[in-house]
Amino acid sequence: MVTVSRIDLAQRRRKLRRQRRVRIIQLIWQTFAVGSLASGLWWLAIQPMWVLKNYQDIEVEGNQLLSSEAVQLQTGLVYPRSLWRIQPSAITKSLKHQPIIADAVVSRRLFPPGLVIQIQEKVPVAIAFDNDPNTSLNPTEAKKIKKGLLDADGTWIPIDKYITMNPNAKMPTLKVIGSPQQYASFWSSFYRAVSQSQVLITEIDYQDSSNLILKTELGLVHLGAPTPRLEEQIKILAKMRHLPNKVNPNKMEYIDLKNPDSPLVQMNQKIPKKNLNSQK
Image (cartoon, rainbow, N blue to C red; front, side):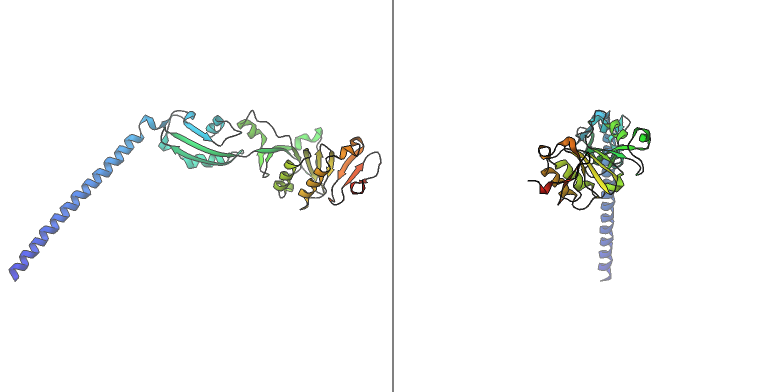
């Protein structure tokens, strides 16, 4: 029995040595294969075909206001540039900091080599005049007024940077006067109502926080201090679009919609207010 046990142990040792040799050989081949693959990929990556030669290798999608070239230049890339040395996340972050770009996604494109930039723009809907509450809009105090653009969400867009990125931009016709901080809380819903109104509104004046004034095709409209009924007031104004057929516009000073349930017309030349609900 002793002799058999020694033979069995010897066989087991030989088997274990063979298994170790096989594992070593497999490890060597795996290392060689991985190294060869990595070297091949590296060699492929440094080939000229994976290099961006100029900004035309960047495809821009989603732009309506900005030209593709304007967006391409904002990447800050210096050409030629290896596709693999470009950091899409860094370019994405840089583009999102641009005043007219609301969102951006940058990805590599393999065939043909390049970048794809998808953007969402901020669309200006109004020219904003941000002046000190104690400052009136007159030529002698014009230097105190900060001019910019607003989008539908009330985001402030520096007008100089907007023009730089979009030199041929068409400016909005709607003007807003007052501090954006004062009307930021109700701007989105209020602008939506204004833009959908059947009465043309060309100016929103909120220099006086106790009285929001509109300049419209019917004349001046006083809404009073902003309340949750702003949208309702705009709808009442739309119902008054035929007012010039009833009242001489030259004799009207302003339309009073502070109480939308009882709209009034303030007449000039010391003519008293007319209650429109009482007219037949």
